[in-house]
Length: 401
Ligand SMILES: *[C@@H]1O[C@H](CO)[C@@H](O)[C@H](O)[C@H]1NC(C)=O
Ligand SMILES: *[C@@H]1O[C@H](CO)[C@@H](O)[C@H](O)[C@H]1NC(C)=O
Ligand SMILES: *[C@@H]1O[C@H](CO)[C@@H](O)[C@H](O)[C@H]1NC(C)=O
Ligand SMILES: *[C@@H]1O[C@H](CO)[C@@H](O)[C@H](O)[C@H]1NC(C)=O
Ligand SMILES: *[C@@H]1O[C@H](CO)[C@@H](O)[C@H](O)[C@H]1NC(C)=O
Ligand SMILES: *[C@@H]1O[C@H](CO)[C@@H](O)[C@H](O)[C@H]1NC(C)=O
Ligand SMILES: *[C@@H]1O[C@H](CO)[C@@H](O)[C@H](O)[C@H]1NC(C)=O
Ligand SMILES: *[C@@H]1O[C@H](CO)[C@@H](O)[C@H](O)[C@H]1NC(C)=O
Ligand SMILES: *[C@@H]1O[C@H](CO)[C@@H](O)[C@H](O)[C@H]1NC(C)=O
Ligand SMILES: *[C@@H]1O[C@H](CO)[C@@H](O)[C@H](O)[C@H]1NC(C)=O
Ligand SMILES: *[C@@H]1O[C@H](CO)[C@@H](O)[C@H](O)[C@H]1NC(C)=O
Ligand SMILES: *[C@@H]1O[C@H](CO)[C@@H](O)[C@H](O)[C@H]1NC(C)=O
Image (cartoon, rainbow, N blue to C red; front, side, top):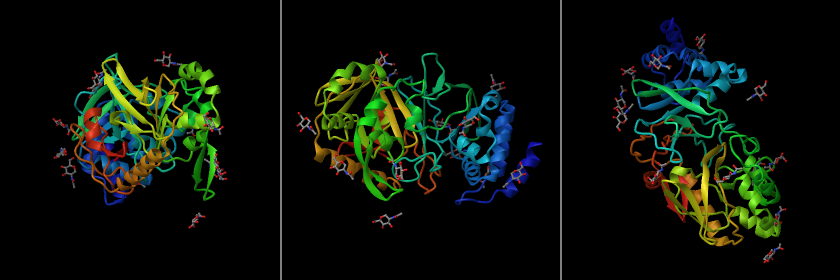
């Protein structure tokens, strides 16, 4: 059954963006999925051929270079929402989020150390990172139970089996992965503890260029993070931390509160936990990072306050949140440091569209995940090495390339 269907599919799939499907390879890959009991996925992989996203996904995964495929089991796909699996365009985007170009076969680090990889998901309705058509990332790590978990998913997704075909490593997972959702959807989610910080974000104003109205207006930082900013990093105090700091926060005037929030925030650059190094906040203050066997920590240098990063890499369509357990009561602002950091981040993010990423240790970046044609970046398994490899340090700001 499989081969004749596939040959028909292949004949119908045009070469898109300079890539074409290798039907021999794809037939073999789908055969391996069926052998591994992943029959639903094999069927769905064929049904996305009617969409351009699906065609370029099938072309990319069959190009011979290493890929990691997170393959939902039949049970996972059966329990997935019908509106994910019934519409080929939605399904193609969801499956694109399950494919990571690169070789990640070396040991997966133990949480909170993580592995980050850039997937093939570039749909501009779902991903709005800095620097153009940058693909969304996925984070995973070995948890205390000894299993590899995909991090910060609404439904905890665990790798339950492994096989391969050619250079494609196939990891079966027990839940379909959810594409990162916006801030308004993410903050109330029950798998993170961020209620409280939303209220603070609602009270802080920020100038914001609205491309719909083509003008700069003031809006709340909540609105700008929810829909507007392309690329940001926010160290978000968890619910307990906000409660503990409540009386201090209430004593601040609007300028002080804005500075305080800006000292938890980087505008224009998305810095994942594999890339932590000295950073300059949007208010111009310095953040430093330490790591040891008890965890990852971030220190606000002006107040010498250290917070534990209790949940790294909460992914959003347009940035990343790292949940921390303290509020930095830092109301200082160094406007020139802040504007220089933002300018560097913006220029680096723009420049990165055409730059090449060096080979990243065990994670080899491969081409084709961005509509603009730049290389997909594997974001590494070890933060120390990755900072050197993928971070361009400009004015204390790490620009993700
Ligand atoms: C297609 O994939 C097969 C392996 O499945 C490989 O032998 C062949 O060289 C590939 N063809 C092209 C044009 O890359
Ligand atoms: C794991 O995959 C192998 C084939 O690669 C398959 O035979 C086996 O049934 C799978 N096990 C589970 C628990 O899915
Ligand atoms: C996709 O494949 C199906 C068979 O699985 C075929 O009926 C359909 O015409 C193909 N569509 C395109 C656009 O390739
Ligand atoms: C696997 O990828 C390497 C490059 O990373 C390439 O040299 C090799 O030919 C590929 N193997 C297959 C079976 O495609
Ligand atoms: C899927 O359907 C459910 C219920 O029918 C709805 O609540 C949800 O918003 C839909 N999701 C998407 C992504 O359309
Ligand atoms: C991945 O890299 C390792 C070396 O680090 C190599 O042994 C392995 O064959 C590679 N796997 C794939 C699928 O390319
Ligand atoms: C941008 O302007 C449009 C039209 O007035 C408005 O609906 C939207 O909420 C604005 N965006 C933000 C983030 O304020
Ligand atoms: C936005 O403003 C710029 C500069 O004033 C102008 O060149 C551009 O055409 C405007 N775009 C829209 C969509 O109005
Ligand atoms: C935005 O707020 C700043 C200070 O809070 C004010 O100086 C500026 O005029 C406001 N801009 C607009 C467009 O309302
Ligand atoms: C806020 O308080 C600081 C420190 O007391 C003061 O310098 C600043 O002028 C105040 N700003 C406003 C808008 O009240
Ligand atoms: C994470 O990596 C750092 C640096 O290599 C190491 O000190 C720490 O023990 C690691 N943490 C875990 C939980 O493996
Ligand atoms: C916030 O983080 C601290 C430190 O890990 C933890 O004790 C506390 O329970 C967390 N708060 C919530 C609401 O999860």
